[in-house]
Length: 608
Image (tube, rainbow, N blue to C red; front, top):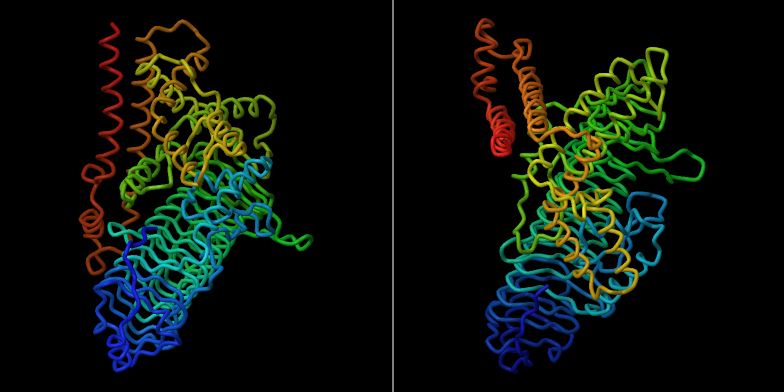
C-alpha cells in the first residue's frame, strides 16, 4: 500500500485559531501535524485525538466522535463520519487466522496483503507439510510487524457517512460510503482499480483486495475478499477466503474457500466447510457438516466447475468431481471424483450418478468463454492465478482414468446397476460413458500431440491449486523452497506461482505429447491416422454440442410466451431467445470446433 512522502510540520497558532473557529477540537494540537501546503479552510467540525498527520488538499468535515492516530494522504475526503481511530499495536487484519474449509479448525490460513488463491490452497489443503506452513506463517508475521501501528488513509481515498472505523488501513482511491462498522482490516486499493465498501457493511478481521465491492449491508467476519469480487445484498461470510471475480449475494458462507468465479445469488443458499472454484450454487443449495458427535468437523471438496440445482443438499464429508451437476438430496457421503462431467441426481431417496452426461453439453463451452470475459482485473496487479480451460492435463487425466474405471465396473457387474462410493450407476450408462470419456480425451491428447511431439520434461501428474492447473512436481518444489526459507515475502511466493502459470502452455504441450504415446501404447499408428481421429472426435463433439443446444429451442419451452395469441408463442420465443442458427453461443461453439478440425486437416496435409 503506497504511503505519501509528505514532510509534516506543526500547526501555527494562527492555523489553530482558525481551526477552533471552524468547530474543530483536539486533545493536543501538538499531535496534529500537517503538510506544508495544508488548507485549514477544508477542515471543519473534527474531533482530533492522538497523533494525526494530514496531507495536501485534504477535506475533513463533521467527524463527530474522534479522528485518532492516522496518517492521511493527499486529496483525501472524510465527511460526516463518527469515529476513525487506530491503536498503536494494530496490524490491521494482517496475521489473522481464517478457519477455512473445516469449521472446527485445523486448516487456518493467515491473512496477508499478498495472499492469493494458490498460496491459500497449499496452506489450507497441505497441512501434512508442517514445515511449509511454518515458513508461510513466518513471512506473514514479518509482514505484520512492518506495518504494526502504521494506520493509513492513502491518497485519493473518500470516506463518507461511515459510523465506526477502527484499526483499518485504507488504500489509494478507496471509497467507503455509509459503512456501519469496519474493524481490524486492510483495504487494498489503487487508482486504476479502487475498492468500494458500501452502506451498512459490517466487517471484522479482513483484507479487501483491489476492485472488490462489499455493499448493501453485507457482513464479513474473518475473511479475505479478492480482486474484483462482489459481496452484497445482506450476504454473510465468516471465516471465508473469497478470491478473484466471485459474486456472492443474499446468502451465507461459513469456512468456505471460494476460488475464482464462485457464484451464489440466492437468499437460502449456504456454502459451508468446503472448497470451490468456477462454482455456481443454485437456490437453496445447502450442506450439513455437523453429525452431533464431535461438532462441525466434516468438510467437502467441490472440484472445479461444479453446479448445484435448486434445493440441492449434501451431507458432508463429500467429494464432487469436476464439472458435475448436483440435483436433489445426497446423504451417503458421495465421492464422484472417479467420474467427472457427470450428473448426480436423487431418485427415490437414493443418489444416482449419470457419468459423462455433462461432457458434451454446450454449457461447458459457454462457461469457459464466460469466465474468460468476466475477469475484471488489471493485468499488472492481478495476483490470483487460474486456468480457465475446461479441458486441461488434469481433467483429461481424469477422463482417461474414468474410461478405464467404467470399463472395469462393467466387467465386474452382473446386475443392472453398480453401487460405488455413495451412489448407484446404471450399467448401460457406464458403457456409454467409457466411450464418451475416451473420445474427448483422444481428441485433446492427439490434437496437442500433432502440434508438438517434444515430450522432454513432461509432468507426470497435475494438481488443481485453487483454480490453477500446475504440474505436481513444480508445486512440490515451491513448497520445499517455502519450507526452507528461500522466499523473503509472501509476494515472492505469488511471483513463483505466476511463473508456473506463464509456463502452462508449454507444460501442457509436453504432457500431451507424452500422454499420446502412452494413450496409444506406441501402436505404430501414422500421423495420418491420428489426425483423422482428431477430426472424427471434434466432429462428434460439435454434433453433440449443437444437438444439446437445440434442446433450448424446443417448442415446449415457449410456454408463457405470446400470452394473448398462442399461435405466436414459439415465434415470440425465437424473437427473444433466437434460433439455433442465430444464437451467438452456438455460433461461437461451431467456430471453435471447426477451427480445431481445420487445424488437424492442415497438419494432415503437411505431414503427408
